[in-house]
Structures are given as structure tokens and as C-alpha cells.
View 1 (cartoon, each protein chain N blue to C red):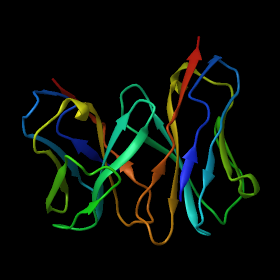
View 2 (view 1 turned 180 degrees about the vertical axis):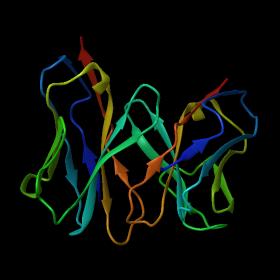
View 3 (view 1 turned 30 degrees about the vertical axis):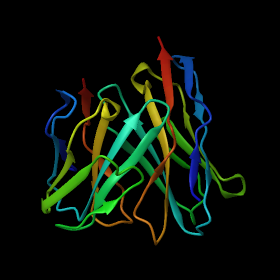
View 4 (view 1 turned 90 degrees about the vertical axis):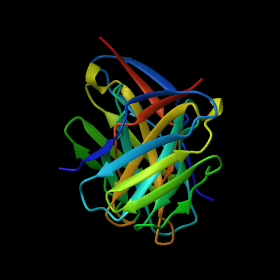
Length: 115
Length: 112
């Protein structure tokens, strides 16, 4: 069975602090994709990143970075020097390949950045 | 630029009404998806379609049906709306099953 766990339901940090959102997944597939999406108050899910299971390199994009560790089945997301505009719900997701079109989403972490 | 649109941002309906939620994508994507999002439950897949006139049940299809008469349009139908279908409904699409899904802005449906 596939599962994505985001243990942090809600996090609040003060602006400019760094914050890490945790994501742990379960899958029996050897090939899979992991995703992070952002959902701002407007409601639309915004795609942030997709990572192939064969690529364990960490990725950095501006203030965002992702740490993928197969050994612990984790795909954590860090925001450096957080800003108020980062306030949103963040979803981690998993897609097993090649048999399945479906993406399994975690329940999301609501992030509040306080000014 | 990727574009998925949904016909309404907010919708209020009464119990027993037939409700249509429309989703349109202009990227010539093969696959389209309907999810509902509820607090504490995340996103759950209702139905998806991988081609015109094709549909597959997702994890929670009960009480819903779908229609895909044209490639760009995927409709979610609530035959007889009930209060437990009050939710945020999100449409998504991708070109192939291995591609990233892109989402529309969502429709917040309230059933009274």
C-alpha cells in the first residue's frame, strides 16, 4: 500500500526563520515520483517540485530546498528565511510507477509565517 | 503556460439538486482528474479520465459521476447533492500519466 504522512498538521514561525516540513512515505514500488505542492489562501495547488526515486540529490531553488533520503523514506522541504507570502498549506505526494496514474497526497501541513 | 480553469470558485446548492462542476484545460492533456479536499483528510481522488469518453473510479466515487465528451473538458456530476458533499473540489490534468499534474483554482461547494 502507498501512503504519505505529514505529521505536522500546523506550524507557526516568525518571519525570517527557517522552517522544515516533514514528509514520510511508504511504497513497494521501486520507481516512483515524489512531489511538493503549495496551496495559498486562493486555493489553487501550485506545483513546486517533482523528484524521481532514482535521484537522491538534494535540490535547491532560491529559498526552497528539498532533502530526499530513501533510507528513511523521507522527502523533507525546507524554507530558508521565511516570508509572509510563504504562508500556505503544503502537500507532499507520491506517485508509484508505472502501473498507477494516481497520486497519493499527504494531509498537508498548514504553515503560518508571522510578521 | 499551463492553464486549468474551473467554472465556479464558489457554489451553493440545495440537497437533492443535480450539480455540474466543469473543468477545462487548454494544454491538450490526455489525463484529467477530479479530487475533493476536506480538512484533515487531504486530497482524495474521485474520478479520472485518460481519454475522451473514458473514465476510471478513484478512491471515493460514490455519489459522483463524470463526463468527458471533449478532450479539454471534464465534468463532475453530483446526481443528487447531499450535505456531506460540501467540500472543495479540485480539477487537475497532465499530458501523460508520468507527468506532473497541474491544478485548477478549485470550486468550493456548499450543499444546504
